[in-house]
Image 1 (tube, rainbow, N blue to C red):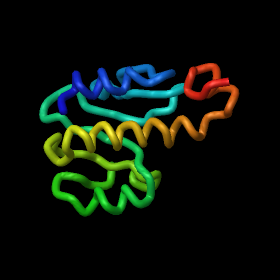
Image 2 (cartoon, rainbow, N blue to C red):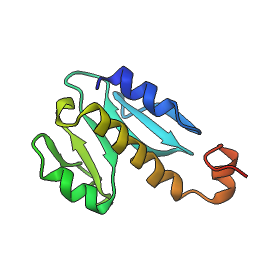
Image 3 (cartoon, rainbow, N blue to C red):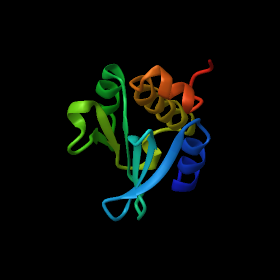
Length: 117
């Protein structure tokens, strides 16, 4: 995965916006709530939210660690893109999106097109 592929994937889901924060971090958000953050410089490093089970499993892998400042909220930092397969990238980023979207009020999810009326 590279930054362009991550951007294309994340922006393909309803209600997703992108924003640059802290000077050099590309953030993908739903209703201003981040679900994926990546640096815009090389090497590519990406953080995203995951479930409790996925957090434990992922942190046991090489090149994946609890994300600084966000680990208590079950975010991981992927230090090397090859730590995940393309299919795993798609799966975990989609799960992160769904975890954040699920916390939004139903009315807001409907407005964003995340759930059908």
